[in-house]
Structures are given as C-alpha cells and as structure tokens.
Image 1 (tube, rainbow, N blue to C red):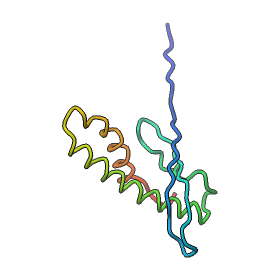
Image 2: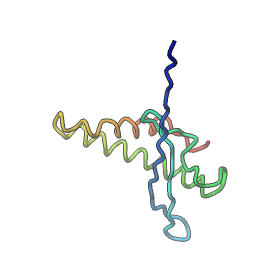
Image 3: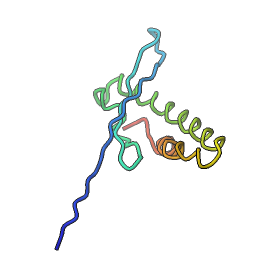
Image 4: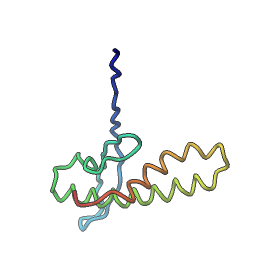
Length: 106
C-alpha cells in the first residue's frame, strides 16, 4: 500500500500601507499567511507584537485594505472580457473572503 503525502503550501505576503496617526504619517507593513487562497485571520500583522498598539492599528488598516482590494478586483473582474478576466478571479476571491471574515480583534 502506498501512502500519499500532502504538501501544504503557506505563502507569506508583505503589503505596505500608509496610515495617518496623530504624529503625521506612519507606515505599517502588513504581513499575513495564506492557505488555499485564503488569508489566515490570526496571521494578519504577525510582524507586530500581539496586543500592541502597532498590531491593533495594523489590523485596522488591514481590514480597510481588504475591503478596498475586494472592490478593486471585483470591478476588474466584471469590467474585463472573458477569458482575460480570469487573472482577477483568485485575488477577488481572496480579498472578498478576507473582507467578509477578517476580524480586527484577534
């Protein structure tokens, strides 16, 4: 009997966003891990200490980013003729899933 082994691929992606705070502009680097084209909620902003002010601000910015990216890729998908629109389907699904499921509070 042969055993089949399964390989799980986790992709780490880094996105840089600008956020305004009382001191002016500050830069939050948002990092997350993906599995099966889905952003793993508790991995978002793992580059900042859990519970820190930076982590909370980063996660709030991430939520806004996911909402904007969902809208962006949905529009691109809808406004591009098939079969050329297929390249927008996976990012649309990923960010719209994150928009619906990501919770700022970890």
